[in-house]
Length: 206
Image (tube, rainbow, N blue to C red; front, side, top):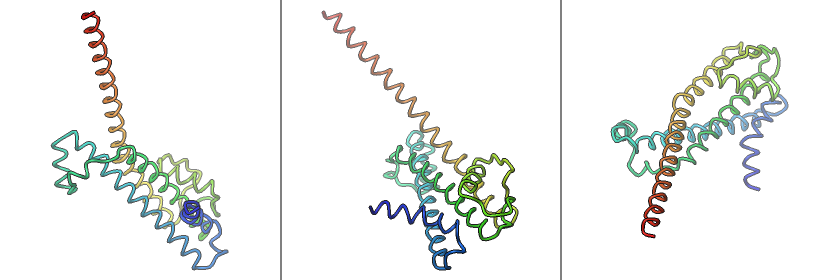
């Protein structure tokens, strides 16, 4: 019950306020903006922890990188024991949250100022999510584009964040997954070789 209540106020409330900002008072809209800002900070924290985790994993396999990270990032040895699956899930959730946050903000902006986007009117929920995902992936279909200064700056900010995910997080996680698959294959081959060796020894003794 508490989780549903938390989910409603963290995700649904900002969207409701963004769709109809003129129907609510300043206090209600301010609360929605505050909740959206809180979700943004949560996403930032998740992204930072995921980044530290994946680069710590890489540092465990390379002593020079480990020393570099300890000097630059001031990481402690105990921080290198990370939960890689948890870091991967945290990274994916933070990326989803970021796209959702920007979609809600675009919807809110289009309701406050109809000139914000090329549609000349408020964005629907589908349009807001669609535009946010298209912006994050830098596809840019051109059917919807920002026109006011605030809208353009918001789009640029989202593109920069998406580039951070593509260059830093996604590359680090893909490197981890590639190493993980390679390790699993080597371990499986080792176990098969040991099993064959045991069977050879048993047949020789028999």
